[in-house]
Amino acid sequence: MASMASKTSFFLISFLLHLIITPEIAQSTSNPKAILFQTSKDESSKLHLTTILQKNPPAEIKVLVDLGAQTLWLDCQNSYNSSSYKHVQCNSTECAVAEPNACGDGCQGNELPRCIPDTCYNHPANPIIDTSFDGGRVSEDELNFQSTNGSNPGNFVTVPKFIFTCVPSFLAAGLPIGAIGIAGFGRTNISLTTQLARTFNLPTKFGVCLSSSPNSKGVIIIGDGPYYMLPNIDVTSNLIFTPLIVNPNGGSSTHSVSKAEYFITVKSIEVNGKKVEISKKLFSINKNGDGGTKINTYSPYTVLEPTIYKALTDAFATEMTNITNRVPSIAPFGFCFNASGIASTRVGPAVPTIDLILEDKALWRIFGANSMVQVSENVMCLGFVGKGAGRISLRASIDIGTHQLEDNLLQFDVGGSRLGFSSSLLFRQTTCANFNFKSIIA
Image (cartoon, rainbow, N blue to C red; front, side, top):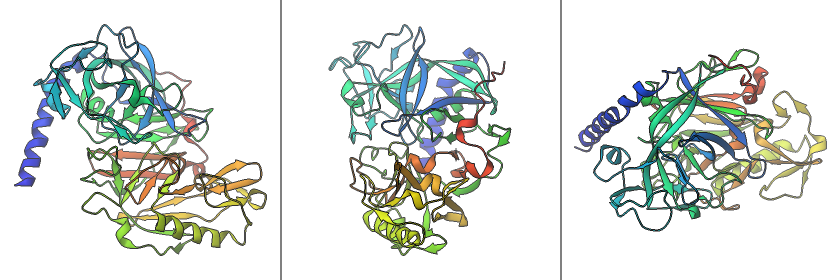
């Protein structure tokens, strides 16, 4: 019965989305091959931002990239002015699609561009401050997105009634300077991924390629490949695939209300080809939603459950003994080394490889560029932290952060429930900063 109910719900939501989005296709200027987001690395937080073009007249708005967030949400409390803004009413088709947690008076507080009763609410979250909000106002406005053919930027296309959420200013606390919201690419009906894929009849796929440099742009591309990096390298050509799985109870305290996040199955971990002894139960998701391996973009470094962290760092330190000596730790890292004894290679510092052995015998190899962090001229640290270090409060046993993702292509095939990943693009003599932004296609 549960399976039948789930299928019925899926088809109902798909039908409602079709009713909402089909008219917007005709109003869009074209039907692009894919949609392009430029990303930038914030030097202070080490997190990644993107800019959206929203409102009428259009305005650039900087937001944090959050792979597991349900939707696009913005701080509307201060100076949200747009002639195309509209709140979503209770009992509307749009409200049903947004999977609201409440309906009611839209005049509470002052977090709004309009004070209108009969308002649809959902439950946005800010994982940076580990806080969620029950009163997110479901809204619509005009958004403009840049198209791409996978090689170059193209013309902008318009979605006149894009669903997003308005929140009060307190929820935006802790975001990188200049950001006033979060761009959600999660597995929901109103994420950027789903809305854009349905609007422009694209596959429900998106590629993420984050630049390791604050001075260079990375990309997120919604739609299928190929994706090209200079010099004309198809970075989708040699992807390794592993299943994406759903955590039915969420994987962090702020996202626990949704199943939007992206999990994969890690079977074991190896350092320099040697298996690290770790309890297998930690790799599985239990009935409470704890455990497993999640991919996120709100933590700058991979966060590990304490026993996994100890086992991995001990194994890594052992393999490092013939390379260089340890030095005092520098927060938030627990294992740091004398950088002068570490050679350089095409894929970063010459240190032991860390392998995640995944479902379907897939192997995600982490080289020095993604495992080590240069914290000073003479010190490099292993870029993994134990759960409880700093502000991060997580339920996943392994929470893969942005440092381990940079200069790797990840393609999230949401419709096919699988993840394609490249490992380091440095091996192919390119990086995520090598998308050709300078050449514009007509």
